[in-house]
View 1 (spheres, rainbow over the protein chains, first blue to last red):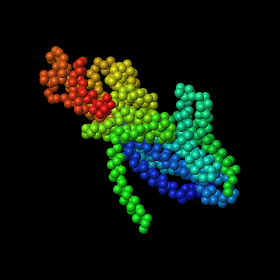
View 2 (tube, each protein chain N blue to C red):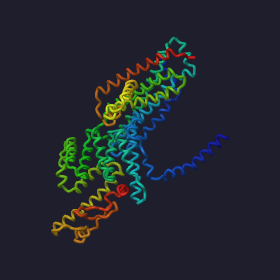
View 3 (cartoon, rainbow over the protein chains, first blue to last red):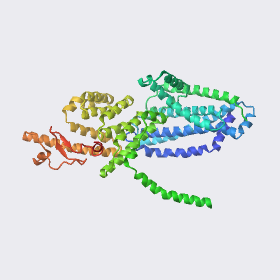
View 4 (cartoon, each protein chain N blue to C red):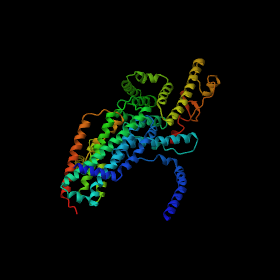
Length: 263
Length: 284
């Protein structure tokens, strides 16, 4: 499988993804200048901007690399020569997935270092009101990465049933937005206004809440920006959730991909 | 050759357009520029995992709008302010990021003093206190609003006690209700504004505090002269001119907002500008 991971990495490098990321990281240079526009929280704004930029770049990589990885191999017919080798479709799928997941991890590390350097630089002149908790920033970056690995798994699931890249990309975007609001809907249902909704509506909302990936559990930005202590549950549960959900998505993707007819 | 020609022509055409487009954008009615924001609930849905940055952008948008309008007002330009439009944006910012201190600070600095939307500002502060549980500024602001503007001294005591508990300082408790009621309100406002100004980093906000501070210091000057008049002559003065003629005000007192000071029926110092040359005069 490690050969497949390496091939996936080579493919990503050939597509000049790194150059694109390099250009986007130039925005980090502007963060200190933009942060001083804040009235009372220059340091906090620098952390917000740094984490948001990191998160946005990872999102783009996850959607576009994840959504086109399988499609490109099928479209270019390179998949047939690979599957002609003694390698199962499941291993092929997992190799591609772990290749992109590993790439996301590496990019997260690089972006995390750039974000930390930016935050540190701003904090020299404008320290936040509360001392920066670097472990929280590390956790926020790590969980962002986990979230986008899960997004890649979602795009792989769509890729296994799609003949073009439209469904993987737009389906993933839709599910990403949906997965970010299910928690909001659930919280609303707990309010008196939510409780007054028709029973069927509430049942559907609850069903979707449990079915769709809950990306809100990975959002630790507020903890990182405002140095709010992280409970142990806030780390362990999202970790376990991402493992379980990724396992589920990849199992379903492998099952569908194995049964798919490739022409 | 044709491609190069086409490229040159398009570039030239675009260059010609840049200045008119910028001018057109500059000449838009001022009120349009603060923009509108969807309902906070909608914004929470569409901003996905980027709520903090969108919250910060909403505050920056309002701040830039306010800064521009302040400059225009100081240049005595006749413009229609959209100060009413600022509150929904600030509210949206707090719903996107309930920890965003800029939003609460702006609400206290501008919504309260310039727009006199005390209840809305207090509601925002109450909302923020649920999240920024470590921050003494929010109960400090709320305590001041209740004491100074709403004359609700019980609530003021409650908030000042909370601020005192958070800082471990008895300063806020000493500021509480009965003391404030009996003490000089103008002196209290000056002390409050000086505290706010000392913590202000943004130049626009600092300027706004400066202006208000100058106005309150002018009021304090009149009040001190009024007290001296009463002490020396044994009767209250009826007008500011009477105080000046009696020699208690050496130089004329100027309202930086452009109004004129006067004494009302109860003898309190008032000004025709109502301490708000900008929005309140437009809003009313």
